[in-house]
Image (tube, rainbow, N blue to C red; front, side):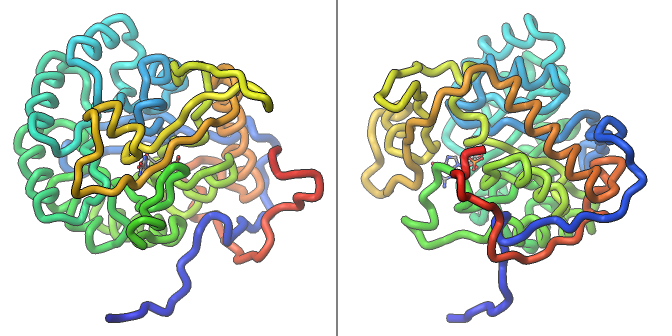
Length: 347
Ligand code: 5GP
């Protein structure tokens, strides 16, 4: 047994220090980035914020809306190949900004092959498992890279530098970072495993960038300021789940409760998800996610505007003219108080 004594930080442990800047307005800030990926050598240009591929978030309506802002929409894993095909046919703007998701269950690789064969312009694939540390996963990434030499392969989740490097070496272009930080994730409670997200991003970004790879910060953002912190810490992409829950584009039922309208949002390892997709919870597993009712928020447009406005504001405060230059302009300060909550902390 060992203890690592150095302090690891979360978004709530820091703020970003403002700096003198020549930027006169938020409109001078560009949030667009252009990447060339490590193995596929594909290029992608856009605003690098992604929808999570969770059932209630990676819906067709969400992907359609999200990709009109030139951000990446990840389909959840439960669409039939022909549903994706039809969607891309009807929404040509989505083709270069959407991402197929697969896991590591029997038939998933075959499903991926089928969809990508039918949709040759769909270039991004996310290979997503809760625990990216198994040797089997690394081998799976190698197989995927052989199958799709020219596709942008994103893979995760891990939270440490050495495993980020291992997945990049196995053939991933982009590694997804985050264990235990999600809003409906209970891994830290159930398994006692996790890593504070800000430190995970900083350490994994450093490892990935040293090899020409990229990372996605996945989980733990609860406000636009957290998205800005994830980019400031060096993440190339940020993936959002909970911040997008409760919108029309989630396609869920809106229920009326005593304290207002609500929508269901659940973790992909929750009992709700397992019962929805597999009919039961396997006997050797304990759920590592929960189901919650979140306030109904209407269209996601306003939330998108708040997120983009928040990140632009951060760039203005720090003097970063482009999102790419934000990490260079970022100095985090450790704090023991984030917000003045005298009138509540909802806004
Ligand atoms: P959020 O943005 O809601 O904080 O985090 C979203 C991320 O949480 C997802 O993209 C996914 O990586 C993770 N996640 C989703 N469902 C579950 C779950 O049931 N259990 C765990 N451990 N993580 C989950």
